[in-house]
Amino acid sequence: MKKLVAIAALAAAFAAPGALAGETPDFAKLDADASGGLSLAEIQAAKPEVTAEKFAAYDIDASGELSETEFATWVAAKAEKKTPESGASTEY
Image 1 (cartoon, rainbow, N blue to C red):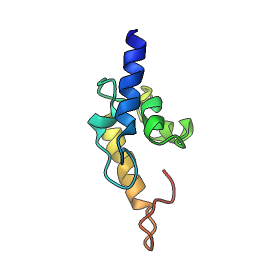
Image 2: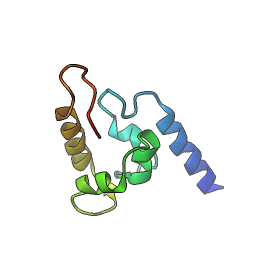
Image 3: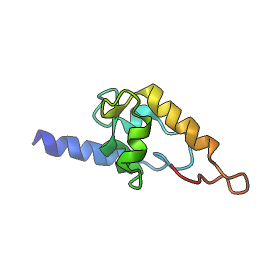
């Protein structure tokens, strides 16, 4: 039962519009289990195309979760990759 509730909470958190789409993502909203870190599953719930390899590139301490600092680094890198003509990100 606890797993079902956790999964439902996770799904609800990532169903929110704009979780990682075009606006600055809110770390706390993405951290569905309130662990203080973002797992690959939490990131993929909002942005399914994120691969384990991309995630691992920003998980500097290899903890399996992105800290707020690691996530902020990722978001900043993503912002730098936006195309000038459309404002769209070239990759995540």
